[in-house]
Image (cartoon, rainbow, N blue to C red; front, top):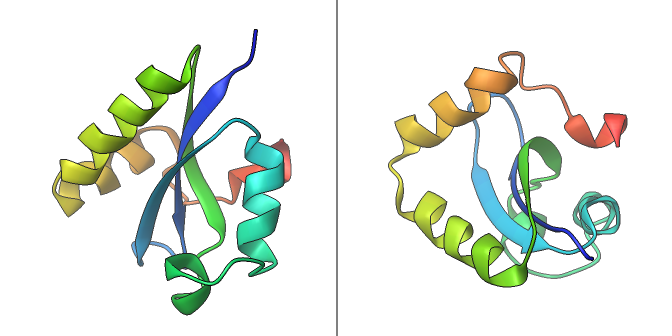
Amino acid sequence: MRNYYVYILTNQKRGTLYIGVTNNLIRRTEEHKAKEVDGFTKKYNVGILVHYEDTPDVESAISREKVLKHWNREWKINLIEKENSEWNDLSLEL
């Protein structure tokens, strides 16, 4: 069975937020940090993993991503700070 992850990246505490989905959280965060793919995260220097959730299938991961993307900014910040009040880079613990 494969896990899928919904994750939130930032460029600094309470900075720009990016929400994504992946089946390999370590590889994907490394790609963001290395600026390997042109796009939003490269443009805004977003690479600090501050929140992630694992799901059992891709459909639930995509569904959760869509929900989070429609949340207002304060709700997203509250979600992050509930488990990661210091906005630590969680990729260092993976």
